[in-house]
Image 1 (cartoon, rainbow, N blue to C red):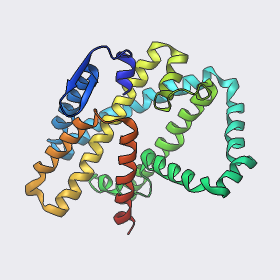
Image 2: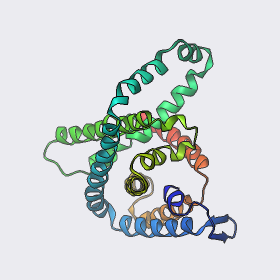
Image 3: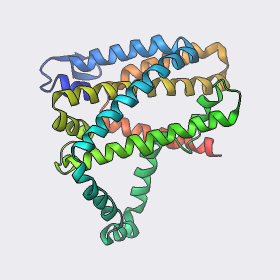
Length: 267
C-alpha cells in the first residue's frame, strides 16, 4: 500500500481481475513481483532465506535508523514536550478512568497484538528460527534473540513514535496507515517518502520470508517432508492474494490467527 500511495496517488490506471475487483496496475505489478521474489527464495529452503535476510535486514535497519534519528534531531527542541505528552496521555485521570470503566480490555488487546507484531516476544514462534542457527553455545543464540527484540521495540519503535510526535503529524487526523510516510515526506520531502517506502518493502519482504520458514517447519512436523512443496505452493499463492485484500481485513485476519497460534504455543 505504501508503494501504491507514493507512485500512483490517483489510481488512474486500473486493472479488473475477475472475482477480486478493480485495482491499480501498481497493485497488480507489486503483487506479482513480490510473489515471484518470495517463491524464488523459499524454494531454496532455510539456507537461501538466511542468506537473503542477513544482507537485507541490517541494511534496512541501519537506513531506517539513520533517517528516523535525523528526523528527531531536526526537531530536537520538541523531544521534551513529546515525552511529556506520552506520560500525560498514559497517566492522566481521563485515561485511568477510561481504563477502569471499560476500555482496558481494548487497550490490552491492541497492545498485545501490536507488541507481537513488533518482536514476537512470548508468542513462541521465534525459537523456531533460533533453533536452526549454527552456534557453539546456546546462550550466545539466546543473546542474539534478545538483541533482536531490543532493536525492534526499544530502538526502532521508540524512534518511530518520537518521529510522529516531534513532527506534529500525529495531530493531522490523516490515515493511520500512512502516518509515518506523511511524517517522513513532510520533513525530508519526496526523498523521505521513497526511503520509507523502500524500508517498508524490505521489512515486509523479510517478515514474509521468516514466517514462511516457521510455517514450513510446523507443516513438516505434522505431515512430513514429502509434502513440503504443497505448503510452499499454498504459501506463495497466499502472498500473491495478500496484495488484493483490504488493509483492515489483513489486520483482523492477522490478529485472529496470531491469537490462535499463541494458544498451543503457550500450552
